[in-house]
Amino acid sequence: MNTVAAGDLLAMLARIPDPRGRQGRRFGLSAMLATVVCGILTGARGYTAIAEWIHRQEVQVWHWLGYTRKPPCPNAFRDLLMALDSAALESVLREWAKILLGETMPSGETVPPELQAVAMDGKTLCSTLASHGRSVHLLSVLDQRTGFVLSQQEVDGKTNEHK
Image (cartoon, rainbow, N blue to C red):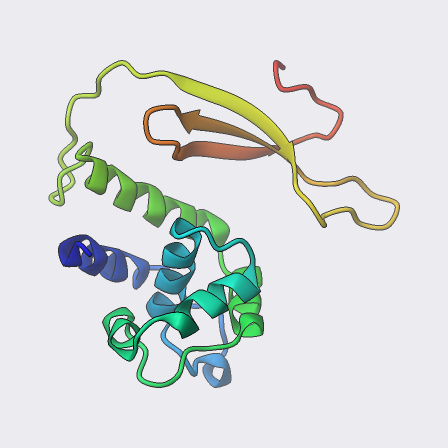
């Protein structure tokens, strides 16, 4: 584990405003968000899988992430992510990925970019169909070298990707 990168991630996640009320702050925000990031990076797909991932880790990993007690259940992750400002989380994760890839220095100075291939793809999100409504459609731009999503935006359901 690269502890420098992990430390940077925890510090960067701490900049995101906490959407929970005072009584909903049993666990630290950066610890929970770092758990979500680590869980997803190791293949977890869903709140239950993320909670299972952290509960399978040794207690020392819990402490590295910032937990002072047993980590939360799946519903705590769900409630947090439903209330969280997704744009703020995306911005922090994009900045962290750029630092890891060497595109940005920790001082904020940028490295001149090389030409690279990107791909665009549109997807309909599962479980977003509202009654008498439309599902949420996202258009994403992916870096083919790393597989990272560079940007994504919600588009009208009637719009094709090429428009």
